[in-house]
Length: 89
Image (cartoon, rainbow, N blue to C red; front, side, top):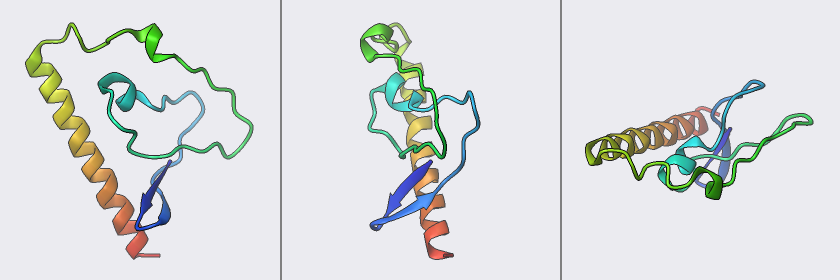
C-alpha cells in the first residue's frame, strides 16, 4: 500500500493474502486514500458498486457522520505517516 507525498511514492504497509482493499471508498463513496500494487501474481475478486447498492442508505445519520469522521481521521493519519516516512528516507 503506497501513498504519494510531494511526488514521491511512500510505502505505508504490506497486506497479506486474503486482506480486503478499497473498503473505505466502497462503503462511503470517498476518494481512495492510497494505492495498492501486487508484489506477485495475485487473484482478485472485484465486487462492483452496483452489486452492493447504496450500502450506507439505511444507516442512521449519526452513524454515517461517525463513519465519515473515522475515515477522515484515518486518511489524516495515513498522510502523516507517509510524510514522516518520506522525511526519514
